[in-house]
Image (cartoon, rainbow, N blue to C red):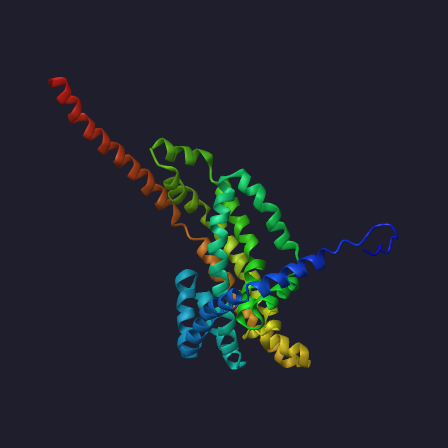
Length: 315
């Protein structure tokens, strides 16, 4: 080992060791990564093809109706104007491809993040073990994730999805853990007093009350997925990310501005939509139904016990 610039500390070849290990993993599990690439790219291909197959004006109407149902007529109007602008810029197909990437990456990240966050919120040991991993995932530069992604999955949607999920996952875990820990202890004790089990308390009290915080984490996942999906255009992922990358490489300012503006419009739409989901107030009904169900079960148990007691007394 060669000494470093200070003259007395040896160089520790951590990068070489990791590169060698990743190279060995790729060569020894090549068939697995080829299969994983096909599995990862399939839902994005199918979803993007489905979104593109919908006539643009009909799709804009559907997006506007969703915006109206979840937020307001003003947001619905802004949605129509914004998406019509994207259509006029001839970036509609690329935006649908980017939307498909973001949706699939968000679904995968949420499926992983929420269970891990629940475990971390319920166990200090899990929280202690998970926290340094999340710190590493959040502080590592985003471009670094593309290196093993390309090594394992070559070019296309798969390396973009791989890198995006890793980059976007930590906020979902952290916010889910925070939401579980912030639930009032007295509310949990009330559920326990009514005879609710641990799973019932989790699904009927803790998760419903943590929904706003969890949705804030989902919102962050979507925003980070958008930013990383654009970077993933560098590794061959189709969509607005590739449009931006091509514009940079060819110094095409007009294409870069149009693609970038389309990304902003999509980001605003998804951000406001998920924020509206997080602000819904449906969760108290779950708490009421849980406590009401516990009361009914207790009353039924007492009703069953009363005839048995009367029969024993008569005997």
